[in-house]
Image (cartoon, rainbow, N blue to C red; front, side, top):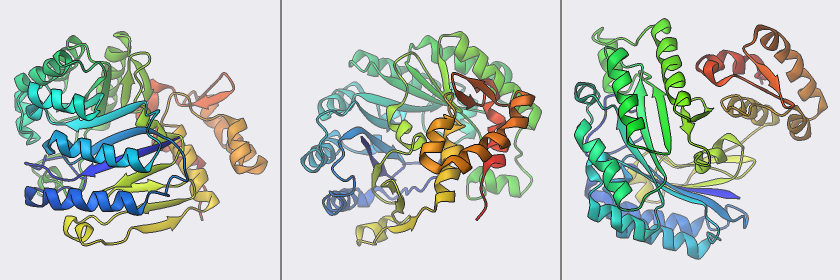
Amino acid sequence: MAGLYFHIPFCKRVCAYCDFYKSVDLRRMDELVEAMHRELDARREYTGGEAVRTRYFGGGTPSLCRAETIAGLLDHAAMLFDCSAAEETTLEANPDDLTPAYLAALRRAGIDRLSIGVQSFDDACLKLMNRRHTAAQAVEAVRNAQQEGFENITVDLIFGVPGFGGDALRRSLDRTLGLGVQHISAYHLTIEPGTAFGRRAARGEFAPVDETVSEAEYAFVHETLTGAGFEHYEVSNYALPGFRARHNAAYWHGLKYLGIGPAAHSFDGRERHWNTESVAEYIAGAPAEAEILTDSDRFNEYVMTRLRTAEGIDPGEAEKLFGAERAARMMRDAKPWLEAGTLVAANGRIAVPPERMLVSDAVIEAFFETQ
């Protein structure tokens, strides 16, 4: 099964933390969508005939698109790929875009899952991050979606924001749980050089929280959400039973996926492709770049993605994919981490316990092969 991703890069406002490719010039929306339809036609053979299991509109801010635009892309894809058994069709949305009329139109278009970028239920924190909605609008958006029949909703939150831990973080988590959503993504703030936060940090005007605070907030998020019945199944993702994000699983488990739009990435099982990070160049037909993954690349990605999930690594699967020698070396490398308790072995698998996933990068790097 394969995943299909549509990247809508437009935003009305740039968030202070955002390092994704985006554009605030919405005037080229229609041209961009036409180019996305052309790319769909050009890449109709990319998945090798595999059925499309999940469809996902990410950004940017896909909720800036008209529902008719979303429907048009989904209908076109269904003409080119077998989407008859699609299990999940997600749209990322800003809270202030989710009016009852728009939500009803999205349901008619085929969207059955919403990923709502709330980030915080604290208005001062939202202002710091340059978000364009308020906490009240976020609550209203979720309730509007529920009233329109959406039964699979994820709320995105950000923690590790200087000055907004403690009671502010607790209130955001409590408010999220009180809304009765099925999935929560809780990301630790990272300060990237090309962002507003990054530029402020370079001037000495903004600094990340220290490691002790990071670990404490991560633990608090984990304990609060798992205590409320959510499964912590990936570093930043929590779900009620039966509501894991199926599209993201394609990335974590090495499945094929096709990305349509500027800056979108694709993977066919052996090669990775990515489109230009320019709306103008994409509209003009700039070809995708590509790289063929070496066996070491594939092994490193396997370790990196699997150890970010609660299931971890199946040594038998690793041997089947990469050979007995690599699998044996991997188990030797795992031994000191298992003895220290940073890795655990259970049900024939090795994994980082979810409550310790914040420090999983150090474990992952220990397994990496160098070229």
